[in-house]
Each structure stands twice: as structure tokens, then as C-alpha cells.
View 1 (cartoon, rainbow, N blue to C red):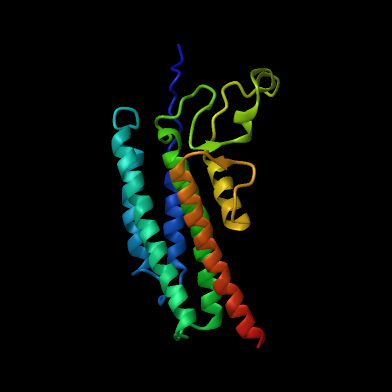
View 2 (view 1 turned 180 degrees about the vertical axis):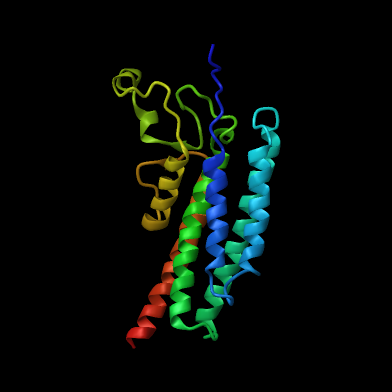
Length: 216
């Protein structure tokens, strides 16, 4: 008989954090938090351990490594964001093209990173979310609002959010600065969404300010 607690695959989150680390390689040196290859090497090593380690009996180790890798990329993002603001305020040696390129990369990292955080934290993360219909969690997805008859008609009786659902949530938060089709229910989800929207708004404000300087 199939278990009612079928764990989600963890590779989407592992790949997402690795992509976020790789994006740091393309940041201008004045905005990067150290050598880009160093972050990629550390995250790649953590990812390899997660892939090689059996997920079932060691889900706590997967979770710890996942949080640690996401935390490292988050710290690098915060550092680079500060250097981006500093470059604009104090008119550093960073040229306009590098400043705009760095802002675009940081905006992309912001989306991928927070999508990963939502995926890791909602309803206990991928190792704890039930294989049955997802009815409880920190976010109210549209599918969760359907009644039983509508779920059966749409063949969503065993629906649960996948990584792409959390990435879509993160993308909307960075572009609309507010919830769209998915609403935050818990306080930690609201705090994370506020932080993500604030980072995105700051990055876009830097880009807008630089564009005004170019026009002048």
C-alpha cells in the first residue's frame, strides 16, 4: 500500500540554491561577497552530500544542509545589496553598466532564493508535506479554496504545492510587491514576503535612480 506521506523530491530546491550561487559568479567584483567560485564550491559540496545521502531516514540532515546553503546565499545577497546601495549613494568606481548588471542579477537571486525558502519552510518542508491533499500551511493556494466536489472534478484530490508554485509566489512578490493569487497565512510568511518585496523594491529603486542619472 502506498504511504500517505510520500516525500517530495528535493532536487528542485538543491538546484535552485546552486543556480543562485552560480549567479553570484557574474556579479561585478565590487558587489560580490568574495570570490564567486568559493560560494559555488561550498554549495555544490552541500548539494552533493544531500544527493548521496538517503532522504528517508536522514531527512533532518537534508533539512539542516538545505537551510545552511540557503542561509549562505542569503547572507551573500544581503552583502551585495548593501554594496549596491553604497555604490549609488557614494558614487563609487562601479560603472553604470556593471551597476545595472549587478542589480538585475541580485533581483534574479532574490526570486530564486525566496522561492526556495518558501518551499523549505511551508508545512514543514518537502520531507513533511503530506502526499494527500494539501489543506494546511503558511500559504493559501487557490487549489486549497476549492470544495471537495470541485477538487474531484478538477482531479486535484491529491494536490500539493510543488517547487514551481513557490517560485511563482516569489516571482509575484518581487514584481507586484504584494500577494497575488496566493495569500500568506502565518506571521513568518508575511515577514518573509515583506523582506523579499523590500529587497526587490530597493534594487529597482537603484536601477531607476541610475536610469535618471543616465538621462541627465
